[in-house]
Amino acid sequence: MQDPTHDSLPDGRQLPRWADPAVPADSLDPQGLSRRGLLRTAGLFGAAFAGGAAALAPSPAGATTGAATGAAAGHERGHGNQSDPELAYLVGDHHVHSIYSHDAKYTFSQLSRAASTYGLDWLVLTEHSNIGHSLPGGATAEHREIARARAENRRMLIFQGLEWYVPGAEHCTVFSPPGPHEVDLLTSFEQAYDGKLLGYTAGAPGHPDTPRNEAHAVKALQWLDRQRRTGYVDDVLVLANHPLRLGIDSPHEIRAWRDAAPEIMIGMEGAPGAQAGAFPGWAGPNSIRGEYVNSPSADSWPGYPTAAYVTYGGFDWATATVGGLWDSMLAEGRLFSITSNSDVHRVAFDTWKNGDWLPGQNFDNVGHLPDPVNTTEPQPGGDFWPGQFSRTHVGVTRYGYRQVMEGLRAGRVWVDHGQLLDGIDVRVNTEHGAGRGVTLGGRLRVRRGERVVLNVTVTTASRPNYHGEVPRLAHLDVIRGAVRGPVQDRDTWRAPDTRVAHTTDVHGRRGRYTLRIPVGRAEESFYLRLRGSDGKRHGAGYLGAAIDPHGPVPHEPGNGDPWADTWMYTNPVFVDVVR
Image 1 (cartoon, rainbow, N blue to C red):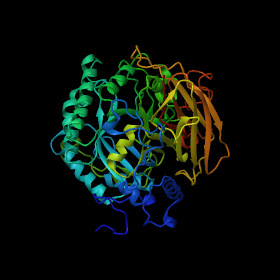
Image 2: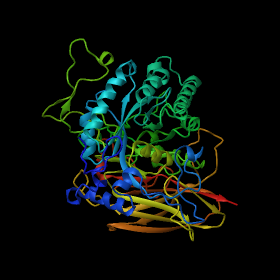
Image 3: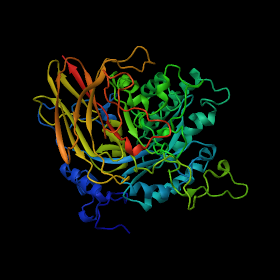
Image 4: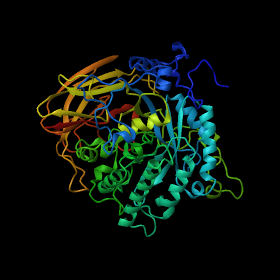
């Protein structure tokens, strides 16, 4: 029976503990208290957050604000003069594996309990595509387990998804909200479009990276988009996973995916999972955070330098390089989001191992691994639990599955490692503009010559992280890039007019504070994004100190303690100059 003292939603879910006024404040940990405080500040609390009872008031006359979401946003997400809602940020992970993946070992109950312990509000269970999963009954059996996990933890949003083997390329997360067709969507999709099942993946016999493979990936995304547009499912989103791990996701392929279905192919992992694999003395002398231990191969796109195959402060080279691949896509003037996640398969220092098969059983004929068995000895693994280290924060106006997806689509996203911050609010406005301005993922229209101001409100870490230390933000960098429009060379990975434009030293700042940073006169369209770190490891960026004087740097192989090198990144805000 549902507890009547708690704010409940129509499907029986309950608000997260930190958002539920029936949960006494003295029962919350410091993280929960901080998040409750941020929610109260936003005017969203209790029933208002559950049901959206706090109406979204239009901005003052003349204000240009906010990011549109869903179909109302049109082809360019985050575009237009919309209401400027107060946002609460839900913390989640879109890349999680269970015993329904051939190389993982945890049950859904273990994963959802861990995610709850580490403060997540939502997660996506993304099993590798495989024969057992795609056959009739495979994903259905998985769905029954997910339904039980949802019932066990009604304070968490648990999506069923898939890790798609992209034809001729790497992997992507695919997921939709709960609904009557969430299972059929995944199984139909993988049977028709999964590169592993079709033999279209890099390295497969006769696979060569041909136009056939790339065209099939585009068709796959267009098929998913049709399922959303026709109402077969309420929504669907796709995010590219560990894009530069093998160097096989070329710039032109990533652009083709985005262009094929811009409302669903919304971004990529800015930082991969597997962040715990390079602890000193743990996984060997060549280990790298994110399991980025590769080098160029015959399947790799030849235009990537060898430096692209490692992580920088735990982040993918495509994201970490100021003026690099992510910036080259943003410089086209189109939103492309980043995320961070656990990619959990096997947690470092964990004592569980895979159970034993019964006679005659294997993964293909059962569709899942045996339940794990606890031991007394640490087992091999390079991952963290969901929420233990990597977090993706998504701005929403109320609590729900579709609201998380709408927030992701709108680009209201920032990511951090090691619980570096409790919160960050970014607003871009004209110097004398009405309203609060535009937040992450949004677009501000200004007249040529108008002065633009960036306001950043930081809420510093209020409690020890899951390593037992209170993390401290040391600096906040403003990265600015000119918007040049669509590129002629679809394989370019350079944005020559992007660089670190401003750095604020925030050593010693505690609590909640706001930085007002003048951006100058807007003579051409541009975007701004933010980055910060604990200041423990940095150096000149890949493209030189003139572009990035103190960016993330690779760690020595085998010596990559992730807790000693934590960073945060935000999505961009665009400023469109009009005549």
